[in-house]
Structure formats: C-alpha cells, structure tokens
Amino acid sequence: MLKAIDTQSGRHVISIDPVWETGAGPLRDLCCKNAIACPECRQPVGLRAGNVRIWHFAHRADSNCPLKSESAAILRAREMLYKLLRTKFGDRVSLEDVIHGAPNSERADCVVYKDAGKIAYCIVEKQLRNRFGYMNVRQKAHTAVQWIVLPQLLQKNPDDPEQFLLSATARDLAAKDGINEMYGGSCIIGSLCCADAERGQFLLARGLECVHKPNVFEPHTYIEVSPEKVILSPKLGQLMVASEVPRYKEWQRAFEIAQAVRREAEARAKEERKRRKAEQKKQLKEAKKQRDRIVAALQARHSINQPDNTNLHESRGKKELTCLHCKSKTRNWVAFIYNAAYPHGTCLCRECHAAGMNFPYEDLSQRL
Ligand SMILES: [Zn+2]
Ligand SMILES: [Zn+2]
Image 1 (tube, rainbow, N blue to C red):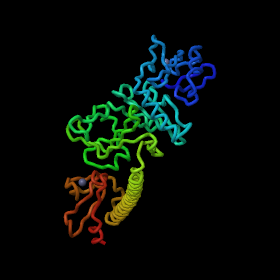
Image 2: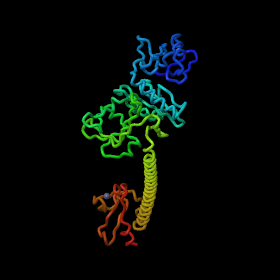
Image 3: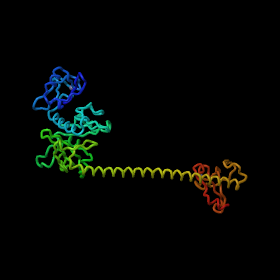
Image 4: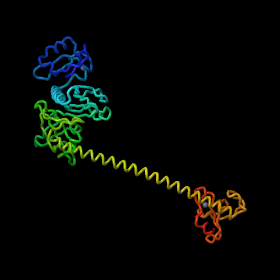
C-alpha cells in the first residue's frame, strides 16, 4: 500500500508523496519507531524504499491483513494513475480509500472527491474477485466507477496485432459509456482502459467488437497515450485524448437532445393519458345522467298508464308479461308497455332493471 497512518497525528502518510523526495530517512525512522500503521488493521508497518519497486508500506510477515499482498505491478499502476489524477484534480484525489457501499470494505485505488459525487478508480490485475460488487456501487454511493486494467488483461492477439484476446473479466469490465458509444458498431462490448506502468502509457481500446467468439476482439480505435496527454472527462473522469474531445462534445450534445426529446414525448403522453381519463369520466357521468333521466321518464309514464298501480315494486296482482330483455315470463316487473309495437305487452323484469336495463326511450315517445 502507498498510504498509511501516522499514529501520533492521525494523519495519512503517502509513501510516494514528493515531500520524501530528499530521502526516505525520516519516514523510515518513523516506521522503525512503530509510528506508522496500516489504515485497515492498525498494525505498525515498515517502509520498503528500494530502487526497484515503488516505495510502499509493508506489513510484518505474519499479518493476515487484506492489504498485505499487493503486486509490484498494481502499485506501479496505482502510482501512475494517482500522479495523473493529482495533476488534474489536485487535493481532491485520495489514495486507497474505502467507498461507502463497496463490498467487503474493498478500497478503490484512487478516489476523486467532487462536489457532485465521487469518482472511484479501480485497477484490476487478474480477476475481479470481490471487486465485482463495485459494478453496483454507483447507484448506492453516488460514485462513478472507472475500471483500469493492467496489460495482462489487454493482451494482443499473437496472430493479429490489431486484435486483443479478452478474458471474461476484461469483457465484464468493458465500459459502455458515452465515449465508447461515439464509436458505434453492432456487437460492441465497450472500451477498455489500461495502465501500462512499465511503458509509462495509458492504452485505450475503444469500441471493442467481437470478431471471433468468444474472446477475440478488435477495437474501432486504439490509442496509446502518455499521462501528460491524457484528458479527463469532467463529469465521470473517463480517460480520453484531445482528438476525441470534439467528437465527444458532439455526441454529448446529440445525447442531450435525444434525452430532451424523450422527456418531451413522455410529458406529452402523460398529458394525453390525463386528458383521456378526464374525457372518460365525463362520458360516464353523462351516460349516468341520461340513464337517470330515462328511468325517471319511465316511472312517470307508468304512473300515468297505470293509475291503479301505485306501487311499482309490488308484483302481486300484476299481469304476467314477457320481459323485453331476458324474454322470461314474469309478474315481477317494474314497468310495462302496451302499444302498437307490443300489442301483447312487454315488461322490464326486476332482474333486468337491477342489471341496469331500460326500455328503449323511442317506444315510449311513440306513445305520447
Ligand atoms: Zn493492514
Ligand atoms: Zn328480464
């Protein structure tokens, strides 16, 4: 690890901090006094400040801290990434921080703290292991996650140097973000960003497309760029190069327009649904009113046609008639008609009346 804690001041100490440029002596002394501890297990750590490997803090041999075993390759890639981010984001960059919501308190290699959220940069050496949960961390913690792979995950195809052989891990990590989308394509899985610390370059494989199942991929564009020439997208911190910026801006504009069109269409559809619902409600109300009017007219007609029948709901003593609707013969009716159309008479039985049936209004108007 590159970051430890000064147990006296409680402050972080970074082994690759330029303050140690004059020599490792003071930091080594602190470590010898057991004054520097691992931020995870709080055990004192030693300093490894040789000429070959990146200066870093190391646990005692018998430790079983999760931060204990880190390869030289990952430390170098982390240093390269940290230095790049420092030049762009300054003090907002932190090393080896735990992101809230990350699985098993796994630490991101670098974290950029912005006003609107965080960007976690996670370097992957071989497999995802427990970093898989980082896939879902974004929604949980307002964190954008940028994956950086090491060169062994972006291996060139020995038969065709334009192509790459991608493991399942590399395929899982391919980013389907806006920068990748600019490169279009039919069966594109995404782009990969690789930190090649040995050559001091970042490798960007955009728009990776499967040319031979399952693992042979060809990028639409392959870029090798030195850290000084890397540009970071302001919102999500994606690594890109100057030549991509105009295209990216264009894509972003098109994307924003498409979003606005979609939002507008959604709003219109919502408005239309609301209007239709109100219309239906109005029609229903109108139909109800009409029905009430007809029922009232029918009842009024009956009291004229049948002055001796004061109780419409009393079936005893009524003449047996055939119901206009269900054709059943019944005395249990609520209204009846005798006219030219129904010389034998017809009725509206109680069941049909209860079911909302009515006499046709025209039949009655003929009678008037
Ligand atoms: Zn530890
Ligand atoms: Zn009936």
